[in-house]
Length: 80
Image (spheres, rainbow, N blue to C red):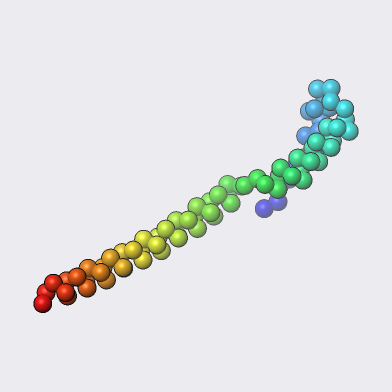
């Protein structure tokens, strides 16, 4: 997902605090290039959570099936 990042607005705050304008703009550009690409959105987190829940559901289903199969084998072995 793409983010809108206002580099000019970001650079404005340090420049107003006395940081050289070129340095403030360079910092804003670096933030856009390096930091913003690593951010995770709420949608990313939601999709990842859904994936994990689905994986756990499948694993739990497998465990239940395997347990029932083992129980069936044990019942057959003990019934003779």
